[in-house]
Amino acid sequence: DYGEWAGWFMRDDVKEALNVCGSAGTEAFGGCGGGCVGLPSFDDGDRFDYSGAIARALDAGVNLTFYYGEQDTACNYVGALAMANSSLHWGGTAAWARAPARPLHLAGASVGSVRSAVGPSGATLTFITADGAGHMVPMDNGAAASLALASIVG
View 1 (tube, helix red, strand yellow):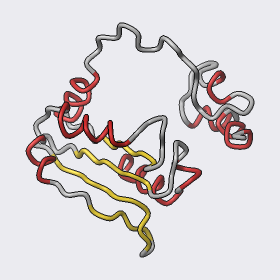
View 2 (cartoon, helix red, strand yellow):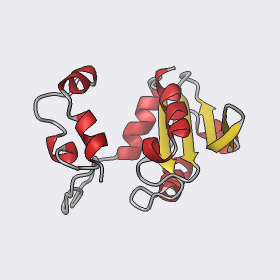
View 3 (tube, helix red, strand yellow):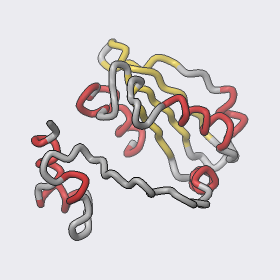
């Protein structure tokens, strides 16, 4: 039951702080929604080059963080890591290939793993896996989620 969590996202002050337009999020977070919307034909026939768009953002100097719960079966980190390793061609590809994954620590405790590389534009690609977390990383491993957020906002 994501009722309390979903209710927080639907508060007017939270929507204003997150710059949510109109009724965006109502279907995903209304009631007990956990942030997911069933879209059976969401990407049927989709030809958009998502990896290319991500690469262009990195090459333009935009920092990018992927974060996944290691036990998430909806958004599997293995597939995302394969994309970052094989399909993402940006100025920092060689640096990314050399970058090791290392333990992610907060207050002396390991909360996951992190891998990052900086490209020629100065943008950083960061990949975080959160220990013991499923799809709802902030609920399952708040420490890893806070470090993921910190990597985005500095």
